[in-house]
Image 1 (cartoon, rainbow, N blue to C red):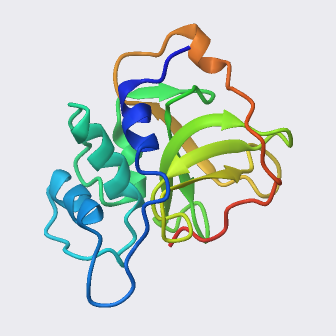
Image 2: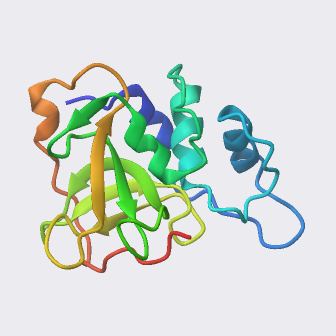
Length: 170
């Protein structure tokens, strides 16, 4: 199974980090521009900007209001379960808080967690595990940035992790 174009693009940014202090990473600044905001720093939560910037770079129009993780729930192709390359939206603090996180599903780990490629995970682009079910599950929904995915996309590749769930996405 080949990567969707946006996953190939997202993977090239793994390791990209915020720059502490008065300077800002130019790639993160470009993500903000690509989604049509005037934000000009890399300290503002930028997971939505990463998703939108990656999609824009691959020729897919970002969702309106894409700076907010929750805006990605407005994509029209709703998935009932995760597919390789789909967008996953999480809540933070509570399901109704309006706060959250967004990234791309790139697999599952040996513990049953989703492996998510996203920006602003520990202030960088990384692949981290997130609970797919149970009391630690914060998933609000899955969306596909195009037409409905082919059936083989629902077979998630197995990626190794230590099982420690992501906890710093703000």
